[in-house]
Image (tube, rainbow, N blue to C red; front, side, top):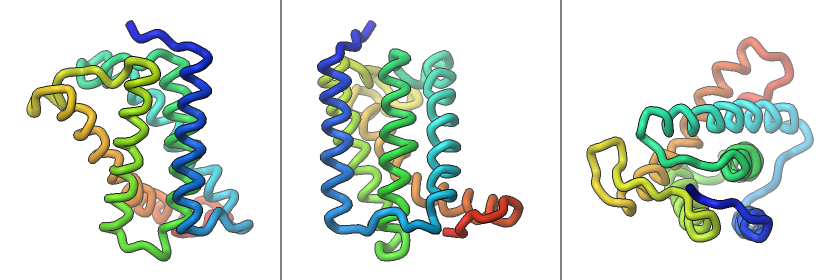
Length: 167
């Protein structure tokens, strides 16, 4: 079972902050009128990923993420950082480049978390592709879909939720 240590948590937070800062050198931040939308995107992604990670572990499709690690990954990285990245690049970057950016950032984060916590250690990706590299790369490519799924989700939600900025 992976062990979570305070130094690992600080290391993960440093990796998240460094990647976010790097992306923000090339993208804008969250505009004032987008803050409500950012909170909605972050909350939906963070909560759904947190629960999905555990359910996928129970189904054998993911390795176990200790609760602290799962919370860091889901709430800080996916909910917080990726929401800011998405809102920063969504208008200026083509969708294909956004996919590459999100998959690449995800790969870096998963490798960092693997080194810091010993997580992301499963030996298959949905029982189709064998090996830990396939597992880490497979989930990173899945994370590349964040911009497309967010775009569709917010457009649908904006129809019924007041003051959401359709993205």
